[in-house]
Image 1 (cartoon, protein in one colour):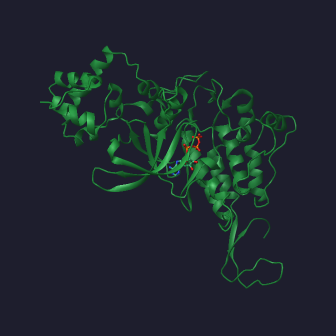
Image 2 (cartoon, rainbow, N blue to C red; image 1 turned 120 degrees about the horizontal axis):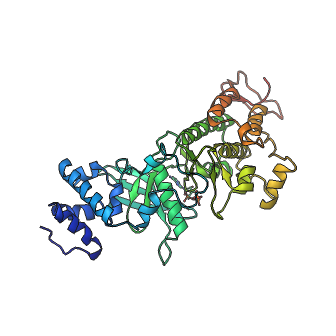
Image 3 (cartoon, rainbow, N blue to C red; image 1 turned 60 degrees about the horizontal axis):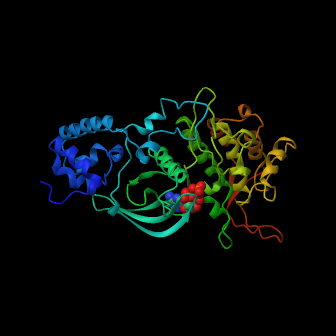
Amino acid sequence: MVDMLPEASSLWLLRLLRDIQLAQFYRPILEELNVTRPEHFDFVRPEDLDNIGMGRPAQRRLAEALKRYRSGVKSKNWVYKILGGFAPEQKEMAPRSDSLLCLHEPEGGLKSLIPEGAVCRGELLGSGCFGVVHRGLWTLPSGQSIPVAVKSLRVGPEGPMGTELGDFLREVSVMMKLEHPHVLRLHGLVLGQPLQMVMELAPLGSLHARLTAPAPTPPLPVALLCLFLRQLAGAMAYLGSCGLVHRDLATRNLLLASPRTIKVADFGLVRPLGGARGRYVMGGPRPIPYAWCAPESLRQGAFSSASDVWMFGVTLWEMFSGGEEPWAGVPPYLILHRLEKDRARLPRPPLCSRALYSLALRCWAPHPADRPSFSNLEGLLQEAWLSEGRCVREVTEPGALRMEPGDPITIIEGR
Ligand code: ATP
C-alpha cells in the first residue's frame, strides 16, 4: 500500500510499479533514488535497487516493464536526449561504436546516483561557463562523510540554457566512465534542482592559481613541473585511448589533488573522436581558448589528439613561465597569422631546459601528423628528465644563491 497521494508528475511510476506488483517500492524509488522520470533509471545501478531492498528477480521485472514503457513512449526528456548521444554539434563522422557508445550503456550507469540530502554544500570554490563549484561533504550510506567538490548547473529563470545543459551533461557522460590516477574522478550525479555533479575534491585548487600565487608562496620546483608533465602525458594518452579529445588543455584545467599530484579536469569541451580521420569538427560558434589552440583548430575548428598535443606544448610553456598568458597582447585574430605566416612560436621560458623546449617545439609542428603522440611524449619526457643532485658544500659567496650541504639541486642546463 502506498500511504500518500502520488504527485501527478510521478503517476507513471506508480502505475508502472503497480502493473508488476512492486508498488511498495514507489516511495523509496522516488525519494531515495530521486527517480521522477523514466530516463532517470539510466543512472540507477543494480546496487542502488539492492539498497532499497528490491531483489534481483524484481529488478528484472522492473527492467522489462521499463523497456515496454519506453518503447511505447518515445522519450523527449532532455537528460536522456543529451546523455544518450553526442549527436548535437557533431559533424563529419559517426561516433565509434567501441569505446564511446559504452558510455551510455544502462548497465554501466553512473558511478553513483546520489540522493539530494546526502550532499551538503559549503564554501564557493569557483565558477565556470555553465556552473558553480562548491566544496561539499557527501555522506555515504555507511554514515561515513567524505569531502567532495559539487558542481551545480547554473539555472536561469526559465530553466537551464540548452547549450549549458548539454555541456554539463556531456561532461557527466564523459567523466562517468573515466578511471585514471590523473583524471579527476566523478563520484556521481544528484538529480535535483539544480543538477549537481559530485566530484573528487582537489583541495589545493588549480595549477594555474598555484603558479601565479604571489610571494611569499615559493615557486614550484622545476623537477616537480617535470613530474606534472609526465602525469599529464599519461592522463592524455589514457583519454586518447578512450577515443576522446579534451580541447581545453591548460593549467587552469589541471587541479592539484595533493602537492605532487595533478588531475586533468573540466571535461565540458571533451568530444569523441570518430571516423577514419580521427578528428572532431566543431559545429557552431563556441568560445575557443585561442592562444592554446593548434592552427587547424583555429582555421577549421578541427580537433584531434594531435591538437591536444599542441595544447600540451602550450601548457608546458605556461608551467615554466609561472602561469603567464600565452600570446599576451596579441589580438586573437592575429594569433593564427603569427603561427602560420610568421612561423612564430612561444619563446623558451628561462627555467625551461633546451631539451624540454625542443619537445614543446615538436608539439607545435605545423602538420598534426608530425607531432608526437601522448604515449611518445611519456617516453620523450623521460629522456628530457632533469638531473638532480645535492649540494656538497656550503655556498656563501656574494652574488651566489646561498646553499647548504644537502640542499636539493636540479640541473636545468649543462653539468
Ligand atoms: P569552464 O567550465 O567554463 O571551462 P572552469 O574550469 O573555470 O571553466 P569549472 O569547472 O566550473 O569552471 O570550475 C570552476 C572553478 O572551480 C575552477 O576554477 C576550479 O579552480 C574550481 N574547481 C573545479 N572543480 C574542482 C574540484 N574538483 N576541486 C577543487 N576545485 C575545483
